[in-house]
Image (cartoon, rainbow, N blue to C red; front, side, top):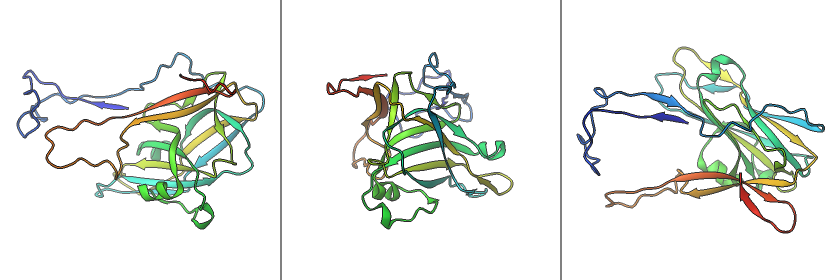
Length: 247
């Protein structure tokens, strides 16, 4: 998470958003701070548990755009999920094809897809859009990375369910900013650690608010609109009680 902020000796006018109500950005201080908004006390890279397998989901030589193109690139890669039954993901971490191309990656997300028409669709890598994710029903985030993150290890009694009977594929979405000098290709993505030894709790995600996509509509005439988008990781007991508690 990159926090960008300004400060100035003069206090801005409360509730004003018109031009001139805030300090001139050129005159104000403009620090940028990278923060990982996650408590690290229980994080570990240890994957010495018996029975753990790895799965790498990566782009295939995606061409990063070159300036003067101001447009960021969102590139998608589809990974068909086969012969993985009731496994638990216990850790995920980023994998970069080179330190040079890593500099131009701003974020990565891995979605689970549950489309019933997947056999009619191409598995070729392509530029991402909301339509692609909607058709394939790729709405649930399995793993996410942004600058400053090192991956995530689930608690010892928690895992994220990975089952090819209910999830037909995984979609990798990587965001690139334009390269300044020369053309670069990138094959970065995620390394997933999973095991057949299911843990006591299943992890899941709960998303609250409005996702910033083409359905996020602000009606005309409103002077002020507030929206938010929060994603929580949950764990639920695998027994019949179905008790849910946050982690």
